[in-house]
Structures are given as structure tokens and as C-alpha cells.
Length: 352
Image 1 (cartoon, rainbow, N blue to C red):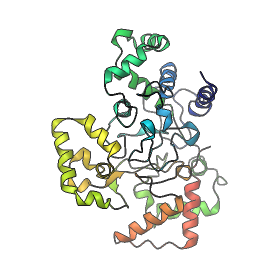
Image 2 (tube, rainbow, N blue to C red; image 1 turned 60 degrees about the vertical axis):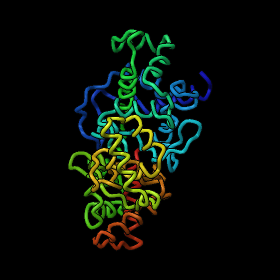
Image 3 (tube, one colour; image 1 turned 60 degrees about the horizontal axis):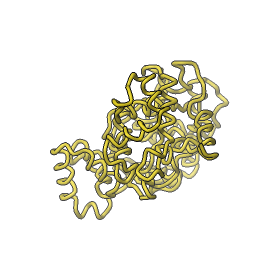
Image 4 (cartoon, rainbow, N blue to C red; image 1 turned 45 degrees about the vertical axis):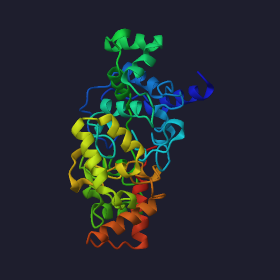
């Protein structure tokens, strides 16, 4: 293991899966109704998560886009794949991903194991063209094969991509983030946890700005997302508008054939297909340009913003959302002080 790889491994252990009581979750998150994590399986998943051998040229791991030191994001407008290829979507954080009922900006995957398969096989992502290739790489590592047999009862000859994604999912379910100033103020009843300006911003967030209509704040916990799909404040690219009929017909044909691998590859590599959003799942024209509500936890650290990473700063994102509200015949005229208060509230959603 190189010095850099050792540092990354230590960082994961310190930041990603810090010890906590089994079943306990940070302040502000829902009670853990999921199956308790198997620590050994999660550790196996962590090792796979940082292993660049699981890419066609040995240059890409899951951690290449989901960096622990960046709250499991990459800070880029859109992700970079195999050979530095520019992908189409902004990298979402994996923190609190265990609570999500659909994955990807368009909700193409219904669980973590299904989601993990997509980048492994994506030509522009990890570039492992066949499921068997993933299993072959794992089988060449005696430590991996011994761990899979011990933890899942799967022998070397029977290892499959499903077993790999199960381990990855076990690790990702350990990535939790809460106990922010907002959580301590709201759920910990610490009146000093947020500034007075942030408290006013929270009232605006809940009230006139109607941010909480999509970014939910519950009585006992808050994921800061409704998990639903809404129209983006950004217009469709002009190139997509010009060929919208051909694009939607292409997606519908792939869905009819059940060719999800090709569709997944196109979403990752074709900007115009990616811009269709939820449509690639439902084939409902009303879902063109609709994307899943992102959680606002750690939003002050997750620039750039939107599904395509085209909004550089948080103040700009507030401006875009405010303008979009007004364009939808909902008057949202914020003063400069109100914008600052809303910004301070969003900054109070940061966990340290």
C-alpha cells in the first residue's frame, strides 16, 4: 500500500466510520430502522470502495468521485470518469444515503447494491464491460475471497458482482452525518447553537420562502429532502430542445428492450440524455427536466450546485431558486438581509 493509499485508509477510519454505539445515529437523523451494520462486511466494502483495481485502467475507484475529505463529494461541476472523461452529472454526497429510497438524480436505482453496479460497468466510469470482469478482479485477491467466504458464505468460484455491491452497500450505510448547529438547536434544544440571524433564516426557510416544502424539516429529525422529483430551475439545454423527440424516442426504445446498461451509459456520457431527468425512468413527458430533491445537509460545503453543477456558489443557488419561484407565479422578493439570513441558516446545516 502506498503512502497516499495508507493516508486515505486512515482518513476513512477516522471520518467515515467513526466508532458509535450499534444502532445509534447522530442527532437529527431518523431512528435507525435498517438492519444493523455488520462491521466486518462494512470494512470489506470500504476496502473495495478505495480499490482502483476495480476499473479498466486502474485509475478509478468509488472514492475518486466520493472523497471522504469532501463529505463524499468531489467539488467538481460534474464527475470525472475513466481517463479523466467528463461525465454529465454533479456527484451527490453519500452521507445519509442509507435513508434514500431511490438513487441517482433521476432515481434509476431503488437500492444501494443496484446503484453500485452502474458505475462499475459504465464505459465512461469504471469501464468494466462485463459483470464477470468485476468478479475476476476480486477472485485474484486472496484476502478478498477469504473475507467473502467468511462473511457471506460465498466461495471463490461463486463470487459475483452482486456480492461486491452488497459489501459496498454495507459500507455506504455506515456514512452518517448529523449533529449540526441546526440539529443541536432544533432537536437538542440548545438555544445557543445557532446565531439569531440563522434562526431568522430558518423561519424564512419554513415560512415565506417555502423551502421546507421540498427540503423537509420534521418534528423529530430532518433529512432535508422529500425524496421526490421536481422541475429543475434550470432550462433544458438548447441542444436537447432541438432534438427532444429523437431523444425521448431513443430512451423509450432502450427501456422497451430492457437495455438498462446502454441507457445508464448514455445518462453518464450524453449531456442531452442526462438533461431529461426523471423521464428516463417513467417515460412520462411531465417528468422531462425533473430531478430528485437533494438533501441540504452540508450544503455550504457541496458547491457547485444543481444536477449539472452549473451554479458555482451557494448565494447564486439561492438567487436561482428565488428567481424560479417568481417565474412560477409565486412572489418571493427577498431583501439583502433576508438572503444573508437564509444563507446563515444553510451554513448551520454543516456537520463537523
